[in-house]
Length: 470
Length: 163
Picture 1 (cartoon, rainbow over the protein chains, first blue to last red):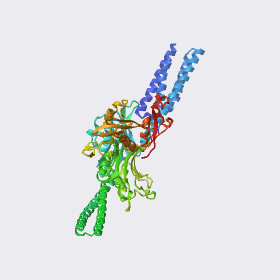
Picture 2 (picture 1 turned 30 degrees about the horizontal axis):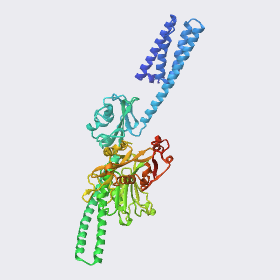
Picture 3 (picture 1 turned 180 degrees about the horizontal axis):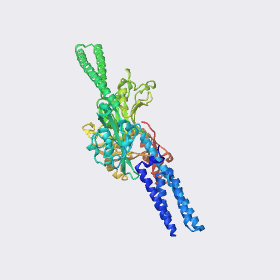
Picture 4 (picture 1 turned 60 degrees about the horizontal axis):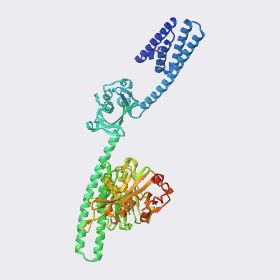
């Protein structure tokens, strides 16, 4: 049978605290009794605050009862041994009231503090990601439910352990992990550990741990950030660990499939290009062999069709490459110049006013401008002027490509960027796909018969103007 | 010959009859000092890349005329239209303002025009407006005139959005 209170006494911290409180209470009451016996009652009663405050701070739920108890004992001792005077009696009563009040206030504040700490602990405890935290000395101060399940190591066995105990659970050896790097104040982390990167203030890295899951291995993503005090000093670090094995396997499978499809498409492109070269040769031979104007005109039409096939092969090559190279900050004016160099503007006036604009984009941004300009330059549009500008708006920036041609009929605007075989081909679809890779979007806002107006909408974090801090 | 050639870099200007054709383009932040040099004789105006776009006319590689579009919190103001003395009467200011208007036409543009130049700016779509129609921040720039803009020989003007 468990004796009430024996559980709390079995914990060394609680046992020490209770012993300290009992000792302090006996000593302070004894000193007060000594003072009362010797008619010295001025300062000594203040000593009683110490056991009251400590008891209320350590055990907020029992703080008030403890302070009532110690105040009562003081009252009994005082009324037994002090001379019966009204003034002295009132002073004792006031001291009793103040002792109880102090006990109550400290208990209330400590209770609230403990509740906040408990809420924070609960948040960490029930985070879906495996999470642990360490203090400045590298001692484990939190080890949540998810990390217990991931590592099989119970919280009780991990809390307060130092000397890289947390790393044993993952790597089987005592070594630095991201949280340890943060509290170690290590400088030049990125130079020393190139596999570690910074994302939104967190240190992030991935690793494959072969001995996990019965030696089947697991891909883990580690993410850590510093815990700071109110002065901004690092007091510890918190690290979360996520099993990304499924994503890695899916990505690998997709890459393999993509590689196979690209290889197949490459073979087809190569064969088509060779056949096309033969066709061009025969068309050239036809021009030399036949002189009749109607046949020459017919051959010219055939050559135009062959050109269209060649452009489609080029477009298919661009489809293969988009998204393969990581996005980067790109000078828009350079991208436009690259696109313009591939086009014949003839008598069409072309101005681009994007000198200081940079956007975070897939490196195929010039392809976007190429297709938009190529559309505007088609003879059927009747354009004589194309202008590219940018417009800074409250939540984004728009690159605007506008011409003074016939524009886009309203009925066609809804399906303009959908892959289709007819009038607009695949260029606009491809352009839409390229800008979408970095959160940009593409839309047409022109008025039919007044001109086409394409807007590339860039989110606020995706653009910057050289020399302009935002 | 089209002289608005903003996508041709300054190092490779067009050539006509053996000499480089003057053209206009927007200055990069590192080139703002070129405009400051032109403005030395124009109220010591200087450009600020954080809020300004400067359009400069290049003649034989040298900046000879400039126009500025400054972004205030409540509107865009055009000012600083100035041509170096020795390059005047060649249409360079017209070139600089054409470039600015084309590049910045997606917003309403405001300006204080010197009165005898209002007809010049009207050719670019600017219309005279009462001072009260100016955005407050731009209006504050001329508080020294105490509401007597006629006496100060300046006319508030506005150009509506559009090419």
